Image 1: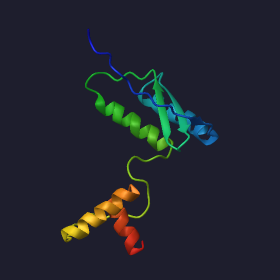
Image 2: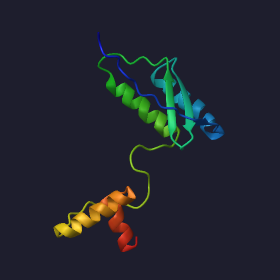
Image 3: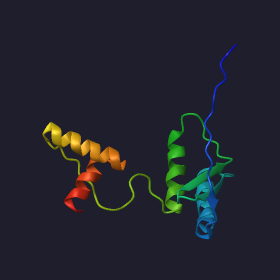
Length: 126
């Protein structure tokens, strides 16, 4: 007898967004130039993320670049960017800390459920 598999499910709450609806038609027109007959549906989640549903999109084998183009067109139409949100630029650094200081910093970060970098920035006052 095989062990039943469990699946994880999550609930996403959608909120109405009239501005996103207006961008939806623009995105659909742009996509139809690349893939005729395709449609775009855009949704805004409760936490502000944008979800994209592409229907009737046929990407032939070996044409991954077409999918990349579709992604760029949709993201351009809705003025969304992938990656870090705009804000203060972060710079990677290396610190040589005495081990007791490192352990204390690590403990502070764990207590606050933050990264060590966030704790250091907070202590310095930025």
